[in-house]
Image (cartoon, rainbow, N blue to C red; front, side):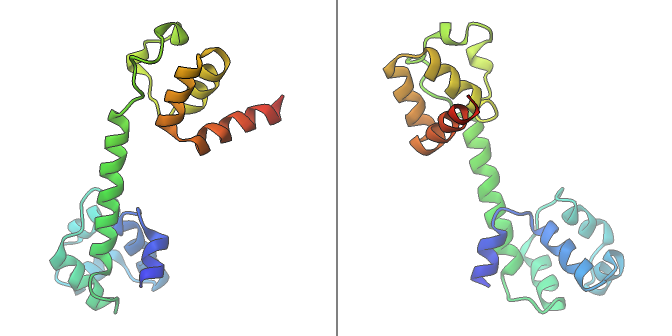
Length: 156
């Protein structure tokens, strides 16, 4: 189970459950009723709109002959991924180090540092000081920065 869990880490348990039901050619509604659960509840989980709870996970695991705790482990890893993602969105490089003039065409406080990391790294490497480059390395990590810079060099 540990190997399988490590492969599925970060996926919502509903996605995994839906694949399992499809693989076994089980109707979602009939399966829900067979484990004494409302079809709407199961449907919300399959769509990722609701979290898996322990009692439901135990029912599903028993019905599908899965190891106890399988779906709850998936839920915990999914929750961890979501929390880390939210935390990352609220983080940014130290803006007191980065000159606003580097981002003259945009509001530096509205930059999505994750989605726009390629543009940010390229701009700081083209126009930034060594101190600004070091801050970008600290924030993104040397591997990410090198990857962006090397890909740009290959295109030229």
